[in-house]
Every structure is written in structure tokens, then in C-alpha cells.
Amino acid sequence: MPQVTGTIAENRRARFDYEILEKIEAGVVLSGHEVKSAKLGRLNLSGSYALVRGGEAYLFNASIQPFPGANVPPGYDPSQNRTLLLEKKQIRELEGKLKEARHTLVPLRAFVTRNLIKVELGLARSKKGTDKRETIKKRETDREVRRALKR
Image 1: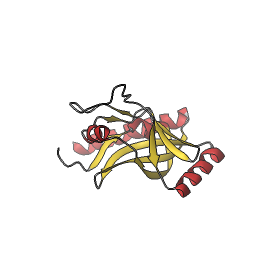
Image 2 (image 1 turned 90 degrees about the horizontal axis):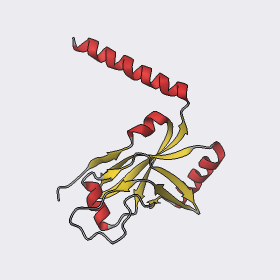
Image 3 (image 1 turned 90 degrees about the vertical axis):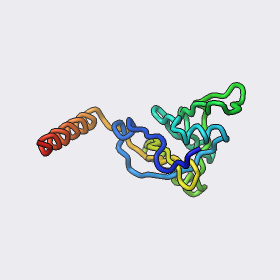
């Protein structure tokens, strides 16, 4: 299997729907066939979110399709909840920020570092409809400027 480094999955919708205040890097607990599949790019973060419960962080709704040809356990659920690996201090800080300011913990991207699969989480605040419209306008004006410069 080829050596993979860099981003393997990205949650582009999260940057549109949320204002990212802070970024945190966390490891993910995966089984062998899930690691192989994720490194092939069969990991989907769209619609996923993270929560802190009982002193542990979990990733919900992240889908990892089974690796073709692997011995996938019977009854395998591709979108099962996965444990995130964070230090206790980080978890306590996150727990306080999530309760206090009503923020959300959103996975932004998954990547490979030194053969380990990690997830970049964003402590985020939900955008209002007007903020989203401003983002769309800014994107369109940037696109028009690039077109004008090409000519």
C-alpha cells in the first residue's frame, strides 16, 4: 500500500456553516481495516460532529467505508461513534468552553501524520444567515477579481 501523508478527508461545509474560533488536533481510535480504508480516502466527515461526555471525547457520524477484501467484522457499522484521543487537560478545557459559551466541536479535516490518523477539530460558533450571505458575496467577488486578472 502506498505511503500516505497529508489530508485524507475534509469537511468543507463546516467552514461555511461555522465561524472557527480555535483548532485542536486529536487522534482517533480505529481498527486495522478502518485505518487502511481511511488512508485510501474512504473517510467522510460531512455531517459529523464531536462531543465531550464523561471525561472522553467522541466523534459522531464520521463514515469509514469497509476496506475491500479485508476481514470486516460482521455487523460493522461505517458511521459508528469513535473515541478521540486527547489529553485530560484538553478535554476539561473543551468541556468548559462547550458548556459556558454554547460552542460546537466540529471536525474540519482528517490527515495522516507519522503514519497516524488524526482529526483537526474546530471549536466553532454557528453562523447566522446574514453571515453566510456575506461569505457567498465575498467568494463571488474574489472569483470575479481572479477572472479579471486572467484577461
